[in-house]
Length: 183
Image (cartoon, rainbow, N blue to C red):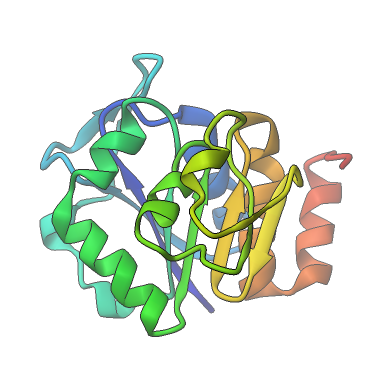
């Protein structure tokens, strides 16, 4: 079973972050909501405060199989400004561990050279930040150990794709049916 860390910075997009957490937990995966603010409650771009499981300084990155970056503004910029997290994103990528980003957050991967030669998608208007990528308009792109998605409207697709990596496509499809999702 995989262990996933979803990172929260002030101004994150609530639905993008929490949909991944919800779907993966429904699939019996271990998902930690991690604050990069040193605060236990982090507020999203729409003022919704969410209680975190841990703060960045407390986590052991070696225990995780995937790092997830939700979008939103200024959440994406705040995640990218966290140098320690960016070093771990680079390390996971180089080690072949999974990294995932949705909405504006795939721009972080583009800025770090992670998308070179890969299929990727992002929120409309952020495509120019996907340096070197084969940009698509698909709801989710999975290319090797890198997963990207377009935004709030594709959050369920994103969450199901992430869950499917660890529980298999059949169980993820069963979860889609259980939540009455139609793609």
